[in-house]
Structures are given as C-alpha cells and as structure tokens.
Amino acid sequence: MSSKVDLSGFDNAWYQPGRGTLVRLLWLLVSALFVQSAVVPMSGLRVWLLRLFGAEIGQGVVIKPRVQVKYPWRLKVGDHVWIGEGVWIDNLANVSIGSHVCLSQESYLLTGNHDYRAANFDLMIGEIQLRDGAWVGARAVVCPGVEMNEDAILAVGSVLSADAEPAMIYRGNPAKAIRPRYCEDG
Image (cartoon, rainbow, N blue to C red):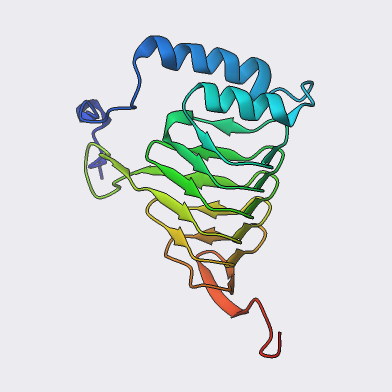
C-alpha cells in the first residue's frame, strides 16, 4: 500500500508572519542570545527585548530563561504573569495572555498544526487566549484555537484541544474537566 501523503505539494504562501525577513532574522539572533539563554538571569531584559520587537507586555511580568517566542509582534501579555523556564510560545497566530497567568516550565502554546486529511499537509493556525488567572502546568500543551477561561487550570503534561471553562481543572490527553478549582464555600 502506498502513502496518500504528498509533501511535495505543500504550499503555505498564503501565510504572513507579520514582519519582513530582516526583522525575523534579527529576532532569531536576539532571541537566541538573550531570551532563550540560560546564562542571562535578567527577566527585565527579556521583557524589554520582547517589547522592542512588538510584544505588548504589562507590568510585573517575570520571564525565566530558555523561553522561546516565535513572533513577539503576535504576543500580548497582561500584568503579573509568570512565564517559566523553557516555555515555548509557538505563535504563528496571535496569543493573548491575561493578567495573573502562570505558564509553568516547558509548557507549550501551539498555534499552528497541519491538516492530516490533506495529501499536502496544509498549514492550519488558530489563536490562543489565556484569560486572567489561568494556569498551564509544566509540560502541558495548549492547542491552536483554544481559549482557557478565567482561573482554569491545565494539569502537568496534559493536552488541551478544546476550550476550558472558567475555574475548572483539566487533566489528561485529551484534557477533560476533572473538578472545580475552588470549593463551594470559598
């Protein structure tokens, strides 16, 4: 049986990253030297550089080492957000992160994927929105087009491929709601 996949026909010419080649190359260099670097301890420098390249970032944001952001100009971050070590924001589409959000170590925000039903593996993208108070656990994945509502939690190592209801805890692959974040009396 021969494969029905034909990657020679792949064409994502319709996709526009939002900046020209020179700016993207400059960002790759700056990101590798200062944002992704584990030897640069200053969160403030990472915030400043992301802003310089077009990210909208609020006050009191902490960005740990080894963070990767594909396109800063497609990133909006609220106030008092924690972005943990090794987080990857693979934002082919816009990513909006509310205030008081925590992205734990090595969590992954994935805005692009490929259509497995298409022979040429067409690119598909979808924006991600993390509302105020959301928490993405270590090594968890948020898939394209997903919205995590206020105070929702995605547990360690889970994969969220559908919207998360407010103040619910999600776990598994695919992630399912397992219980409310807060008890009834508080």
